[in-house]
Image (cartoon, protein in one colour):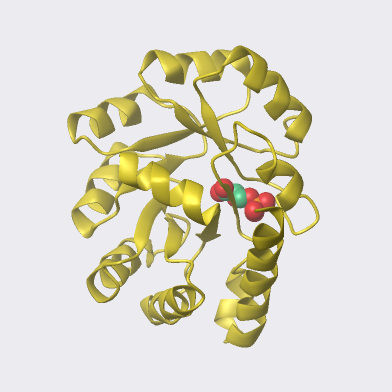
Length: 211
Ligand code: 3PG
């Protein structure tokens, strides 16, 4: 767990992706490794998600692969078996929390209200996805959470972009930011890898400048 936390704090960025195919998964993984951003959240929003997790894990074992948009306990189990090292969900679900705890699999549930933060905290979960970040109060809410939940760190997603990335990452209780803007599904379908590379480089440049 500590090493995932350390990696997320180090890289500060999690590309959240809906992979159209296993081929696209491997092309993207290669690009991310080349860009020195060996982190990916593969969402269960496309039929190739599970195979993609397994393929990336097999070919690029150095990558930190999270499974995202996990809504069912069986998805968490299959993702773990395929090599995912953590489970991300849009919301907090007690069943998912229980199965992840049982498997000693880090779970990052989505929260956006104080009650949800406290429910997750009572399960011992201290790294939470803040979703949907921009619609749920954005940086203002994150700063309010910092005052009251001093032992919790957040991974905001939902509306993060080059325009607000630096602002989020400057908050002391933010571990890293995630989003789909880095690797949009349409660009992968169209094979526009250069454009994806530019989006990733632009974000990495922003991060370099706030360090
Ligand atoms: C997620 O699953 O974390 C969100 O869909 C990311 O939101 P975004 O599309 O606004 O980046």
